[in-house]
Every structure is written in C-alpha cells, then in structure tokens.
Amino acid sequence: MENFSRSLEQTIAFILGGGRGQRLYPLTKFRAKPAVPFAGNYRLIDIPVSNCIHSGVHKIYIMTQFQSASLNRHIMQTYKLDIFREGFVDILASELSFNPAESGFSEGTADAVRKGLKHIEHQGMQKSYVLILAGDQLYRMDYRKILRRHLDENAQVTLAVLPIKRQDAERFGLMQIKDGRVINFKEKPKAEDIPPEWYRGERLYGSMGIYLFDLDFLKEVLYNHPEWQDFGKQVLPGVIAGGGSVVAYEFTGYWEDIGTVASFHEAHLGLVKKDPVFDLYQADWPFFFKPRFLPPARLLEARVSDSLVSDGVKIESSEIRSSVIGIRTLVEKGAQIEESVIMGADYFVTDSEGGSGFQCVIGAGSVIQKAIIDKNCRIGRGVRLTNEHRVQHEEGDFYSIVDGIIVIPKNTVVPDGTII
Image (cartoon, rainbow, N blue to C red; front, top):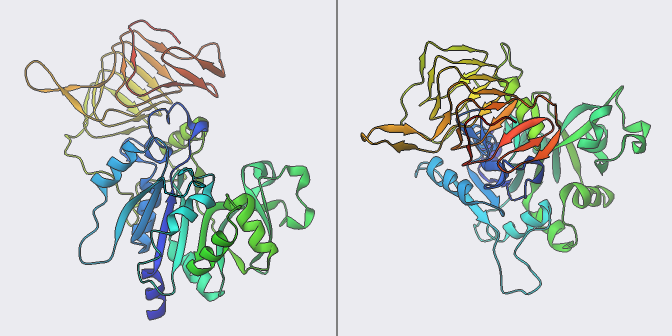
C-alpha cells in the first residue's frame, strides 16, 4: 500500500486541450474545445480535472494551443489546490524556441506531450508515471485502478479500453488483446479491414484515448522517434511492434467523446432524462466548477419538464421541455424551448437603475427547438429557431446549422421576428 501511495504521488497528468476543435465549430469559434460550456454550470475541461482530483492525481498539466484565453482564465479562477500538498493545475501553452526546426505548434498528440516533457525533467522525481487524457470526454473514472493494473502487470504502457460495437469501429483506435495484453493496434480502421481474430463475440475493443506511461519509457520513445507525432497513429503501433509491454484496462461505465456538435447536443439530452445513463447527481464523485455567487433560479408561472436549470436564471410564464438552461439566463413570457441547450451568460449587465440585467435573453414569444445557443446571446422577440425544412448543414450571417442542429455563436444578437 505504501508503494502504491508513493506511485500515485509520482503520477503526473497531461490533459490535451490544444486541438482546433473543427468538428465542434462554431462552439470553438472563440475558445478551445475543453473550454466549451457544458450542462449549464461546467466546462468540458472540468470532467478530466475532477476525475484527477478524486483519484488522488494532483499534479495536472493542461496543454493548450488554439484560442486558449478563456480556458486559461477558467483554470486560474477555478482550481487552487491547498498549500499543504504538492499539487497544482497548471497550463502548458505552445511556445516558440530558439530552435529553428521547431514551429512552436504541436503536430499531434504525441508531439504535444513531447514538447511538454521538458517542463517536468528537473522536478527530481524518481520512478514516475504520466497519465495522458483528453480534454473533451464525458465520463467518471478512478485513475487509481489504471495505475494499480499498470503496477501489477509491470507494464510500460496501460491503455483504457471500451468494448464497442462493429458499427462504431471507425470512431476508435482498435486493438487485439490476448491475456490482457495489447498485441496489435490500428487507428480508426474501416470495418472491412478488421481481422476476425480481433473480435470478442460481436464486440471489439476501442481505445478511450487514455494512456498511462512509465515516464522514463515515454521519454525514450518520444525522444528517439521525433517523427512519431500521434499516439494512436504512430506511437502505440510502434511500441507494440517493438515488443513493448502494453496492457489493457477495461472500462465498462458511461463514456462519450464530445467531439462533434451532434454528440454535444445528444449528451445534453441524455442528462435531462428521468433516469440518465450519466447522472451529474453523484454525491461521492461530483464534478468541480468555477465558484460563483449567484441567486437561485426564479420560475414565475413557468412550465418546466425534464430539464436542468442553473443558478441566476429567471423564467417568466414560459414552457421548457428536455433542455438545459445555463447560468444568468432570462426567458421572457410566452417563450417555448424544447430539446435545446442555452449556455447562459458570463456576466450580468448593469441596468439604468443600478440593478442586474440579463445578457443572455430569450425574447418573449420565441420558439426554440433542437438548438444550441452559445454564451451571451440575445434572442429577439417572436423569433423561431425550428429548422422546419430539416436542413442538415448551412452557414448564415449569424447562425450555423450542423447535423440538423441550429447553433447561434457566442455574443450574437438575433433580431426580432427572425425565422430559421
């Protein structure tokens, strides 16, 4: 037990948050993907950071690259670990160097970690471990279980894996497992290219993008192979082909990659069901978020069903079904909101009498169906965001339609009477 506790103390987490997030556009128009607001109160980055803290992993680096200002601000304002333990949540931003061969920008997940390793080389850590995580996934996981398996198997690399169906194969890195060890790995192969011996009945094993490495081994691999830019495409297949000790840790709980607008919307609809597969209300494993001093939600003659309503919200004589209403939102009289995500606002505005006015407003009589309204938006009165013609993809002056979902970008004002 003492050795395990010491190993846990020597575990460092790298949370990757630097990709462009193109599949989640326009939610990533002004922010990094892990900074996208989630479930009214949170941001996506709060999921892996909370999992780390609950698991006893207190040395956490978040690696950023694109549109990182709001993510940096959120981390700085949210995570302040106490001074009586050696813990931190720190930002590692892409940076230029004097080496003309380095652009400063990372070319893939492995390249990002390679550039981040130099910041931990002089911390005096002996036998250490690096936990590599994504910043845009929804799940609860106790990383101590991965570390325990890693130590028990004397592995150099441990992968968190999921049993998946054949039709989902092209979304994942797939692997062949024998006696708990990973003996083959291929990143997102086509279904017809999967060897039959990789199947376990009708299922396959997919990578969750969660890796635990021995620090010394990780440095050896990445420094000796500077051409390896991505873990799934190059590092893992290369390590396995080279005889590295790679084991699998099977995870059977809820997991979702929030990588697209459709998956983002679907994950929210799952949260508001009567018996959600993924429940935010778990007392022994809550997700942490930025502390705010907001009044409770105020509902005036409103009809709200199967929805989440955050603090600082005011709903006046409106109907809301199967939706998420984010912080500091005003829903005016006669509005109807269904299967939608309203992210709320970053701040209140001061009205002429010195009180708090709402920056995020859903105007009187407006109808919103199957839409995502980003932060600080003002939806005029009598607006209809319903996509009645079932358009799948479209770019307008102040909106996007992605996979049939209407998205209103951050800070947008939608004029009265608009129909989309």
